[in-house]
Image (tube, rainbow, N blue to C red; front, side, top):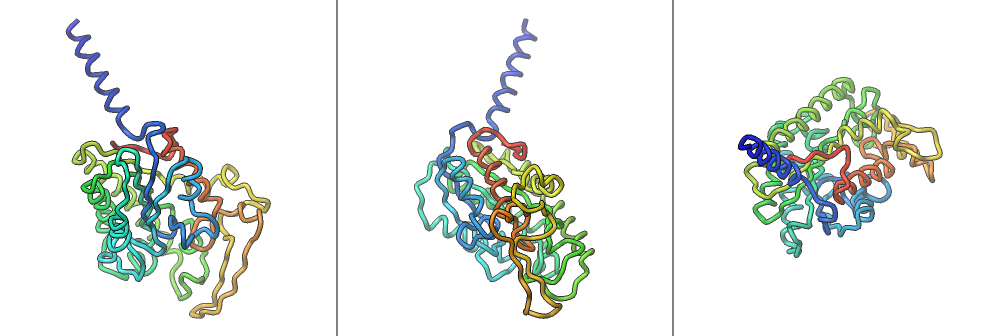
Length: 309
């Protein structure tokens, strides 16, 4: 009897521990976003409506957007003339003095594309490493936690080698129009993304036990976008043939020239494309991101979410 009682107590404790992970249905009222052009709701990267706006509508939550186009985690690590999370977005959030309930507010971060890409780690444009960049992403959790935040969702990096900019058959474009080894770029960006995503997972698992009461989740953007790339018919619903290698807005440049030629797909044909341009997801792709994150935020659960605490 004593053994059965101990077993029951153990199982109950395990059940409680598992149930405590993640968000409860109906728990959230607000969410706060940090990141780059993938998440910016003003300088929208997808040529339409940004995913946080869709997600706010799908989940019936109030959005507080702080993500800025061109941003990295820290300009002290990967300097760029754009508003980074630590030098711009976090200060803007703290200066806003929002009266948010920590229990009902989710903080999201989607960063890394500019940190690992051109004019940064990929091209050796700074002295930072993928470890430095990833540690910065985790530091964001710690800083907000100290200020009272308790619910965090980190969206990992997408398979950037599937974007046109980093594909092996890429062409000179508005983002980079000089000579390069496209195959080398594809291999290197893939390794940077995979390494960064794995490092962030391991670092979050390490830091979670040191943050009592925190709920920390990972949204697997990488696997979602890979699935969209591999199985577009499950996600794209436009009136043109499905396309995961071209873009709604495609700009081809001669080498070393700023005089490019752009073509744009219009109307409902746009929703047949995975990419808006050579680097950014399309609006339809972002609707899918919004739909899945809304499931996470409402407690319904998404197959792309994993809760560490």
